[in-house]
Length: 298
Image 1 (tube, rainbow, N blue to C red):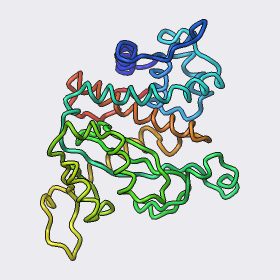
Image 2 (image 1 turned 30 degrees about the vertical axis):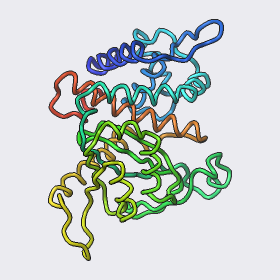
Image 3 (image 1 turned 90 degrees about the vertical axis):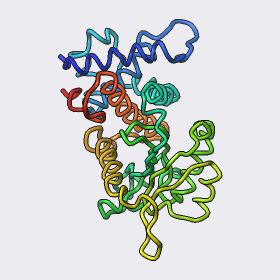
Image 4 (image 1 turned 180 degrees about the vertical axis):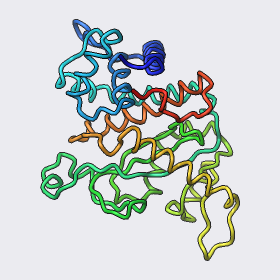
């Protein structure tokens, strides 16, 4: 049987999604597992750390039958989950907007590797060829083949914007594209402070941000005069690294198991949603640590 805290989270999440989102319309007979139940089930999978969908459904049929009376087979679950990517994205935004953190004018941006293949033969025959590529992870001093997850979040770790991109792309170009895509989100936050590392340094990039009324706060280079807020950056850097550690260490981002573009995208979104759901629930229940997933662990 799943623990009480996780059960409470899943119940609240299901109600929130079912009430707040327009789920996919089905021709003819509706599925026995609704879209709201599907997304809630996906969050539970991520929180409980099941990489294998077959093992996950076997576990759910024993321990979550009271919450999900009907569960599909692995192939059906996989197909439905891929199709639900737009709904998962909407759910992330909806949960973020339902917290006080949504109005924070301090954003933190960083990227982290999402490996998608470990061997040369896998890389050659992967369906991700053309999107994924080789990149370098400075934190672990290693090369990888896959994508980079770009995450813009509040200081509490609540995801605001996110995207997957080829690791060879310039970080600044990816972030600019993300801001262009959600221009309305930025427009209603004048005086936004964006905190980033040295990889986002560029006069042209800072000018572009200034046109959007965004100020960039980043570490100073040795040849530069000391920039404003430099003393705060060490603690902020630890914060964004801890958010990435939550995604990798507790939500198993690097063990996503996706083999296609749709599969990788929805499995990464599944973990970002699980993070957002935990922060959302901790906020609503007055927990002292917003990003803690311990109470939802089995």
